[in-house]
Length: 301
Image 1 (spheres, rainbow, N blue to C red):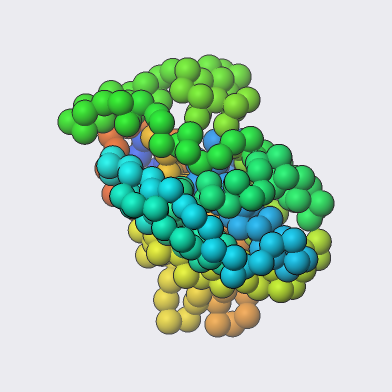
Image 2 (image 1 turned 90 degrees about the vertical axis):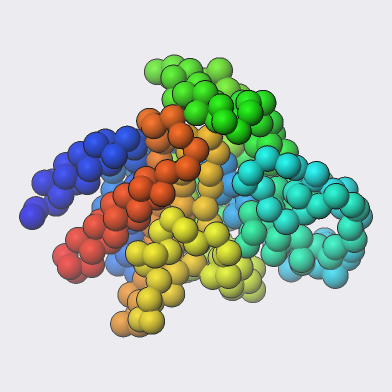
């Protein structure tokens, strides 16, 4: 199958599965890439925790912060399904900055992330991305806003109503009645921008080697591995990633490193058109689409 036919087929399969997908796969060494709507910005949800980790690790490296410093962290006391770690704690804790980076990145812990945002606010994270040569990712707000969406306001039996609102309340210009999904208010990024970030971390130029290495290790130990990991993890490959999930958004970015030495950066940002919170079939379809593009690109080189 030629490339254009393959991309049409992948688009059709995603659409038939109730998904709009923005994907990009890039060979980290040759620069060859293959994508579908890779330049369309979408709200990034928890993907923002990767730039946050990068900025915090750089400040630790430069001596502005001491990773061993313990911070008093208020409990998140979140009771709705989804959030993990300190976000569900009931009592205050004292935790080192290094360990907050782990919780934020590997467990996608929003309360840990906001403790880090207290140290390095969103505008400074965005500035550090720019200085690292990574463009196209906006960082506008902390993660606590991700805990205040319509899904938290409905009974769990009515979660489909929140998803219906997420699907139907947008505008052609990427505006939205739900602020966390509004392209002018939310943290955003495109598949290409996140692949550029992965490129900068796996093939460091504007990022210090020490910082890049620590971030690669954190992403390799990501605990949330239900989306793309089943299609990219094997005895002959290493999958390092970060997921992002919010209302009808299902994202994942990562790098697969093969035993033959080839490495591919992958970013998949999707919007579900199905008003349901639990959609294992959608996650499987997302992984299949990403693998199809990686397989085709790998065979062409």
